[in-house]
Image 1: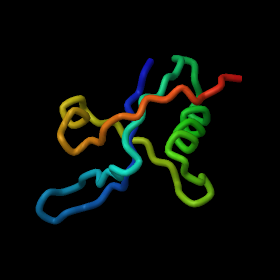
Image 2 (image 1 turned 120 degrees about the horizontal axis):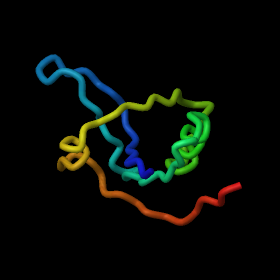
Image 3 (image 1 turned 90 degrees about the horizontal axis):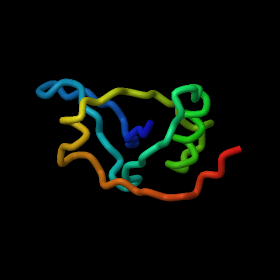
Length: 86
C-alpha cells in the first residue's frame, strides 16, 4: 500500500474553518507500507523522511480525500530510494 504524506500544521481560520497549512519546502512523500505495518513503523518513516526530530514535535496523522490531495495546495512529491528495510 502506498500513502501520500505531507508535512504541515492544522490551523483555524474564522472565515474558512480548519485547514492544513502545508510546509511546501519539505515537499510530499510516498510511503510504502504493508497491511501489517504498525503505527510505530509509520511514525518512524514520517520522522525519517521529513527529517524531523521526533523529540521536538508530536506526530498527528490525518486522512485527506483524493480531491484535496490533488489540489494545487499540495506540494510536489519527492520519490527516493533511501530506506533500508530491516
